[in-house]
Length: 310
Image 1: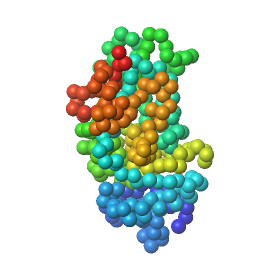
Image 2: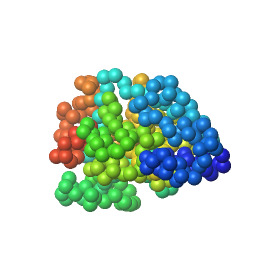
Image 3: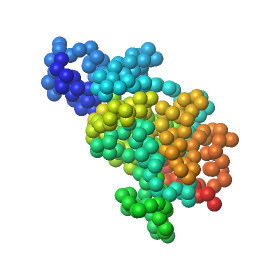
Image 4: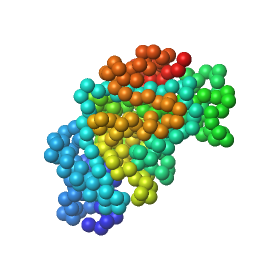
């Protein structure tokens, strides 16, 4: 099979969308004779949903993906499928009074999660507000593209926004292919091989936390993070929707690591831990700080908590 045809087939959102229109129509739109397709292409094209695969099937899929990525990016990826840790429900805290708006979290996230560099995709957006203005009801009008000589700026404060990992996520309800769902540890994930790029989830998310992938990662070979998770930071296909996963490739390890944005924060404004552990730092913050959650009236029940130190 010509390489350019094979690469087109591996753009899952478009080929799978074509298949959903009907078998004959789907094959016609692919312009690919059935008899000429090699096994790996059709295995990818007709791949089961993540939740339907048994362990052997999942490992077979991962092995095939690692081979495809090695050929495409000329680097060897390790794709994990680590399951949720027992007795764990992840929660996140952010001290608004400490955040200095430096955006180190934004770029640590980009580096860790193999996001597209051109065009740039940021899973974290840092909003800037003037002190004293009504900000809770006007998040959409907040300044995003601020560029001061240095931060923090006098008379301003900052509030980063990312996926709130809702307990009642509206994005999950609207997905027509069930490509996104909430896991037992509270992380809302995406099976990129089943996402058709319809962007219903983007419209449903009240936090602007989902992002359409317009391009390939476009990174130098040495810039890829090769330690990945099937439901997290593995390279995405052009045309799928992606989002923060609390660095699932880190946090589900035993012992787990903090998300990259938590590690990089120079002022310790970000907190992360197990909501079910009464001795965790996140539980302490929730129980002892002035805590609020974004748009609580929508009944999404975010597991992302904002608070003030005093």
